[in-house]
Image 1 (cartoon, rainbow, N blue to C red):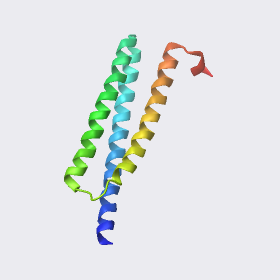
Image 2 (cartoon, rainbow, N blue to C red; image 1 turned 90 degrees about the vertical axis):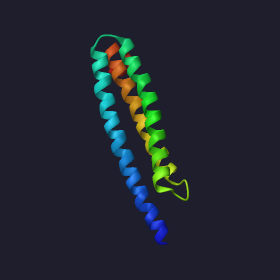
Image 3 (cartoon, rainbow, N blue to C red; image 1 turned 90 degrees about the horizontal axis):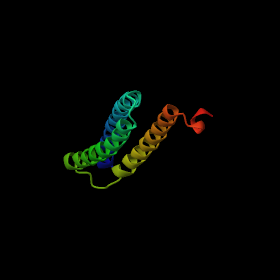
Image 4 (spheres, rainbow, N blue to C red; image 1 turned 135 degrees about the vertical axis):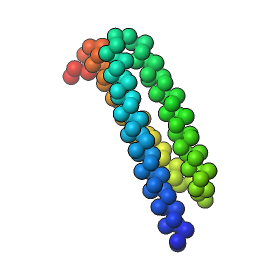
Length: 112
């Protein structure tokens, strides 16, 4: 029973670190995407979106790998909460990037 409590404490810390990392990354993405859209070049925004996908993939693989290497969990239950957080933030980022892109280009769907 004590081992399970130890695991839950580390899982809680992992979820807090993951959430803080995703919040920070989303804020940086927001600043970069607004700056690239205000620059007048649509290619800049596309580069930001593509770099976002690559950096987030590398960042998440590193985070999961570090947690597994440092804490040596006996099960992979920490991946369930991680995948849930990753999915929520990815849906939010996709929705947000589409929203600001549509507003900038004057898409009629964004004005409704």
